[in-house]
Length: 114
Length: 113
Image (cartoon, rainbow over all chains, first blue to last red; front, side, top):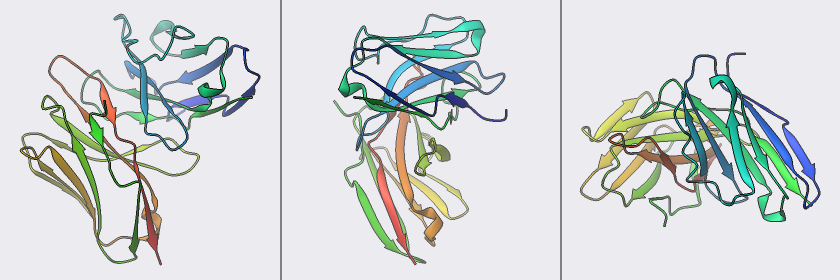
């Protein structure tokens, strides 16, 4: 596809369950970012991958959150033991290189934790 | 600590008039600034950017102004159109030694026909 894709588009889960969110970046983009947007809030940085370098996890809110990027392409964001405050839109973006590149965003995954 | 602030959560403008969206930042290391536009149920899309070596960048109806001494930037849309109604995010990054882009909370623009 031409753009960043994310799946699922919507996810409803029960408190305490684990969820996995997937991101397919634009082909050839070496940088991949995860953000979340809670209701009425801005975009909160979560984690950043650049090529084969160690990811910058400084934005992850707790150790229940983790992310992987396999083969320098697809990324999975995992939230363990979900809490109601995890409810948000999770956005993935990719850019050609690290640094001051325009980021291309996917449509997001809307997560609702009941 | 909000390094990028958009103090107006919403703005309403009449079609054909100018829309001015404001953004303030606190980190003097930021040297690249961007505006993104977001429609409901879609991801943000890049609109316009400016490097700190400039004080103005124009692209069609969109102009971004940067005042480094005041740590302030603004996005001007003229003339405003109903299709411009969206949430606008200001973002900033520091190229030297970093990559991380910090986003503001967004301003929702309503352009009335």
